[in-house]
Length: 282
Image (cartoon, rainbow, N blue to C red):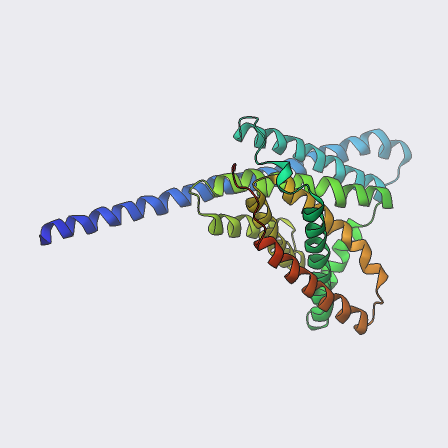
């Protein structure tokens, strides 16, 4: 009897070890697309910059313009999005995951508007409230934001509202989440892709914001069983930054958007958790 129990324990330990090794293998495979995304965008931007200098810079003797730099970033994002779009379709054998009807209703669009605006207001308000405690960190963040918004208004909107959300969702909630979630452990896979999404943003402030946002987007993709849901929410979050200009920049305005954002986000998350959406496909 004791011998059987001993072998049972050994068998259980062996299974647990195999499960851990399998999960680590999945996370390693999920990390490779992250490196690929960084490499594709850096390589594309580098090649386009060299071509720009060859064609234009040497003729005029001038450096590269801010609009040209922004256009290069847009093109690099498009190239990366195409690569990961093809990769995502390949992983899913060309089949569309989930049903758009699960969330493309007036009720769900209103819900997503609440989630997006609430998330943007709450995070922007919190960052404004704590920036006085970390002036050096937020100084670096401000410089990066100036670079991000350095192009023309049309290019900034095109990149932040459309190209970036589509490309980033294909990378993180598409390909990376596919590999990380192969053992059907949603929570661990969601945290893993969210952490990588935070690292992807390249600085502490955006990293914390990105990781938090990644958790919400990962949950949205999982909840509605389609990456189109997280793409739509991502677009709304980025676009709703425009609404921040409606509030004064003083402490009253900051507290207002923080409280308003927290209330709207909490309410929207509650209704989202109660939403009896279909989960027929993954």
